[in-house]
Image 1 (tube, helix red, strand yellow):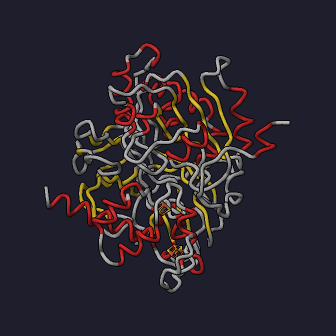
Image 2 (cartoon, protein in one colour):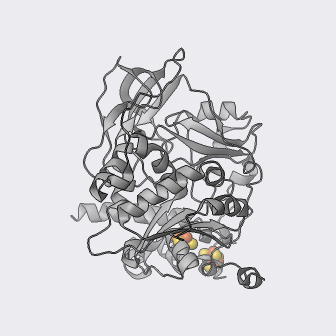
Length: 448
Ligand code: SF4
Ligand code: SF4
């Protein structure tokens, strides 16, 4: 008998078990959405400097054409998600209620939406590491698991680090979301190609795809395609939240602890999301840019939940109309229920980092009354990186944000939300921590 089955799959300490809600969409093949009449393309869809627009009002652009260039190394270019006319380069609403610079394109509905012809064919095996990293930047790809960190920057591993393993994150541990699950079933060749490219970029001899054991169909689908030399393997680990976080993944797959203040590269690891690598595998060899992505559209009040391939910049209202949305916009979240962002308006676009659009009914979004901390320690038992959320919460209430950072490792908190989820007093701990981090950042900026 398989020993893993006997003793249970590998996992990390603490964390929480959540209702999955994945059955609504994980068996449905990905469908392409029609092109919306208007596409909103923000210039800052990634961590780092916004891209610089190189188009003008009234200009005709073809799907796949470069419309904004990277502003330095910590930036990525943007390609036209549709064929159409530049309506304006101005300000557009953000999900959080602010405004940001964006290129707005009126889609040419009479166009066949053919991709811009590219005569580039990259043989990545013949390219140097530097050429490959430049080619990754040219695709405009950022972390598609939600982080939106420029992937080429992540691939530029520090000179003092030697990478022994690429970890490929296929956990998709947030409830409701199933885009990675579908992608691993539907885009195996692209994924393996992207993994090989990433291994070459970081000079790693091996890669491990980590999936949660609620996706064993993925393991059975991928295993026959893996190389005989064992350089790429796939492993199932226990289904638990937040299994897909970098530190948790490294510990569950390899037993490697990434200490506070260390980078994954210090531990010899380069960690990428499956969607990111599958896009690199699909786009880089053809010299194409990132113009569309798959999103899970699911939750309450939807007639047609599923996974949809949509042009980046498609407005949420258009997506939800196609999914048969009958609810109120108050309960719409970009991303999953644990780390997603509640949206203030449906007239905002999906961006490169959007993995899902989740609609929760009023019951799920209702805020219960907050009570004082009863020192039950549930939050300590849940925190996957062993912080003390109870103490951090008390300090936040006293506005001692500096103490939170200096003595209680506030900056290690990656806002997974486990502590808030288990708190019987409904204390919105993770929101407190977000505010504290923002205020600390502002204070540091003021102090130079
Ligand atoms: S949100 Fe932060 S403090 Fe709370 S459980 Fe997650 S990592 Fe720990
Ligand atoms: S879970 Fe809530 S009530 Fe319990 S110790 Fe943590 S903050 Fe206090």
